[in-house]
Every structure is written in structure tokens, then in C-alpha cells.
Image (cartoon, rainbow, N blue to C red; front, top):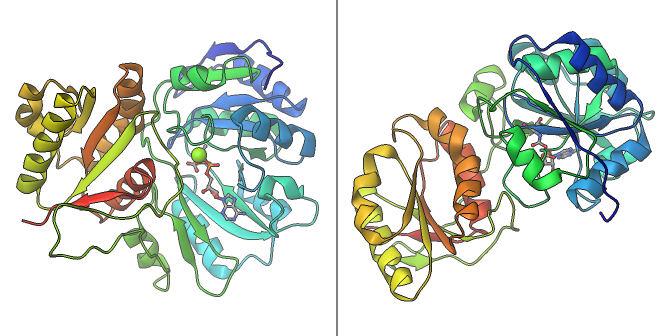
Length: 358
Ligand code: TXA
Ligand code: MG
């Protein structure tokens, strides 16, 4: 966007946000403005979900294509019935179990909800976030709030107000700074508008927990099947660039010991070719990478997948600001939160996986 607006940064206590600050942000939303706010998953870029013009401002600020639909955020379950129709029993069950929290339900859209929030689809994605600042804002605004992640399109989602400003300063009215998001990965998106409940995006609520409640939940992780005899090998790109740092990402998968060796070899080769290499490494593996002349960011202990998820996007941004050309990272499993991390890494790597077998 060419025309710049002044972006105000308003600090709030993440657990007990000051009501006068929340009121300023709520009024800005009601007046059609853009307010970025913390949620437990990532920061959202909010606008009045019932105001077509305000929703268009989100697409413009993010440089987001108009075919990518946006989630509506609510404070109370009553608001759900103003946004969606023909809500199936499974949706109510999941809402009861996981809201407020990192779960988004895709349902049939109510006719009074502007079509542009859903990119023209006949559905609407709805989430009730649990973060106290998000809840206070939604309660004060008294309107459902459309909010994609508060990053420029294709960039890693923002997990701090600083990330939001890096991408969106001059494009939005307010950032509520309530500290770092605690989950750091976006919500799980489940489509309940069709025959079978289907996970569209793995996220903060793990699929195993959804299935405990609704056993028919379908989830086909984006996983690339490789010929087991060829190694290391690169699969063809299958996914559009998303959640991406500016640097290119090389994603390795396989048993930890061989993956570490392959990453070291690759880092050395790239380094010899004059490339600046960044490595995203669990704390307990970082020692393997210290002699390679690479920038290393430690993500947390490899058995603490929640800690890794929390810092992953921020770590990608940090390596970008250090000016690396290529980022090396490996998978953290495919179960539980590992599925969400895998999904984000796979998109950041544009669908390319270097699978190392033995
Ligand atoms: O955790 C989150 O979900 C964060 C916070 C701010 O709530 N929001 C977020 O929004 O990640 P966004 O726009 O970055 O991702 C929304 C995802 C996209 O994958 C989009 O395609 C999908 O939800 N989505 C939204 N509306 C949909 C719809 N009507 N049908 C299918 N998918 C939809
Ligand atoms: Mg996003």
C-alpha cells in the first residue's frame, strides 16, 4: 500500500489489560480501523468482520490475495449463531471442548456475513481465542473480528508486536503489545461444512485430541512420499510458498544422527560456495553445528516440542535479519504438535524435503 498511516503501539498487561487501552482499540475496530492484537497462537490483524470495507483493508495491508479467506474471532458462543448456519452437532461438541483456544471451525456462512471475509466461499471460519487481551478486546468491541495472522502475506506469522511492526508499520492503526504468543503456531482449522470433518491445517489443538471427541476426523498430513532407496533426495515442490523467511529453507527428514551429518555436509558445501548459512537447531544438537561457520539459533530441547513451536517463526525471522541465504532445519516428528511444525516447515521449504535414510 502506498498511503501510510500512523501506527500506534499500545502496551498492555497480557493477563490484565487496562480497560481504557482496550476501549481505544475496540473503538478503532468499530470505526472500521485495523488493530493487531495478541492471541495465544500468533498475533492477529483485526477488523470488523461485518464491515466489508474494513475487511478489504486487511487484504490490502497484508498484501493478501483476495482468494485466501479470513477467520472471524468471537468472544461468546452466542456470536457463533450470528455468523454460521446449519451448525452440526460435532461443531458444537468441539467448540464446547476446545474453546476458548487454538481451534477454528469452518461452517456454513450466515447470509448477513460479508462474502469477502470468506473470499467468496459459502463458509465462514470461526475461532474463540483464549488470550486475555484478545478476549477483552472482543468483549469491548461487541462485534466479531476478522483476523488473519498479522504478517505480510507469505511471511512467517508474527508472535510478537515487534514482528507485527516489522511487517505492517504504517499500514495499520494500532498494535496492542501484550508480549509473546504462548503457542507460537496458528490454530488448527477443521472443516465441518461437508460430509466428513476434515482438518485443513494442523495447529495448536492436536488431531489426536480432536479424534478423541469426534473419531471420524479426517487428516491427511502433507507428506511427501519418497523412494526409500534414493538418498539424500529432494522431492518436487508441491506447496506454495507460505510461512516463509526470505532465505530459502532446506528441510531434512530422517533419523536424527544421519540427518545431523547431512545437515553438516550441506552447511559446509554451501559455506564453501560463499553462501551464508543459518541453522535452526534444538539446544541439545547445537554442538554438532558450531564449527561450520553457520549462524545457529537454538530452539529449545528436542523433547520439548511445545517450546520449539513457540519460537519457530521468531527464529526464522531472526535468521532473516542476520542476512542468511539458506536456512537448514530438520523435522520434529509428525505426531501431536509435530504435525503442525512439519506443516509450517514444509511450506517454508516450498514442499521440498531432503530425506536421508540411513
Ligand atoms: O491461530 C490462528 O488461526 C491465527 C490467529 C490470529 O487467530 N489466524 C490465522 O489466520 O492463522 P490466517 O488467515 O493466517 O490463516 C487462516 C487459515 C487459512 O489457512 C485459511 O485458508 C483458512 O484458515 N480459512 C479461513 N477461512 C476459511 C474458510 N471459510 N474455508 C476454509 N478455510 C478457511
Ligand atoms: Mg497466516
